Amino acid sequence: MAGGQGALMSYDENNVFAKIIRGELPCHKVYEDDKTFAFMDIMPRAHGHTLVIPKDQASDIFDVSPQTLFDTVGTVQRIAPAIRDAMEADGILIQQFNGTAAGQTVFHVHFHIIPRFEGVTLKPHAGDMGDPDVLAVNAEKIRAAIDAA
View 1: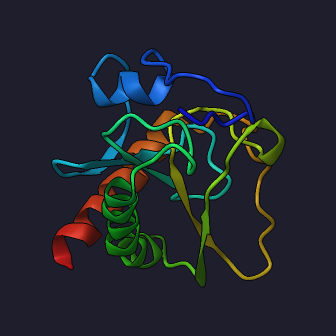
View 2 (view 1 turned 180 degrees about the vertical axis):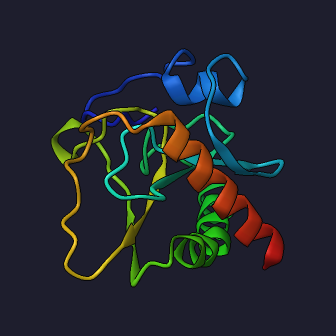
View 3 (view 1 turned 135 degrees about the vertical axis):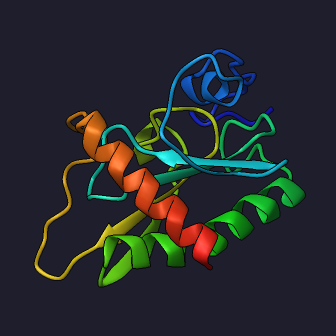
C-alpha cells in the first residue's frame, strides 16, 4: 500500500481511528452508516470540529479506493450543513491531511469539518484536548441537526 509518509507501509490496524470504529475506544459519535463514521475531534480547532472516516482500511488519500473516497466525501457533504447549522457557524472549513509533512497524525484517511466564525482564530492542529462535556453537548446538537435535515 502507498503510505502516508512517502514510503511503502501497511495499514496499522491498531491506529486510534480503527479502535474507535471497533468500539475499543470511546468517542462522541455524531453519525454512522454502513460505510462511514463521524465523531467529534478530541482536540478541536473550533467548537463543533468533527471528523469523518471510512470504515474501510486506508492510510491516506493515496491508499483509499475511489468508492470508499466517494462514500466518505458523501458523508462529509451530508453532515457539513448540519454542523454549520448546529454550531451557528458563518462557514465551514473542510481539511484533509496526507503524510507527516502535511500534518497527518493518525494514519487512517479522514476529513476534518471545522465550523468557522468571522473574527475567530482557529486553535492549532493537534493542540489542546477539548472539554468532554462540551464535546458531548456539541455532538448532541449536531446529531439533532442531522436528524432534522
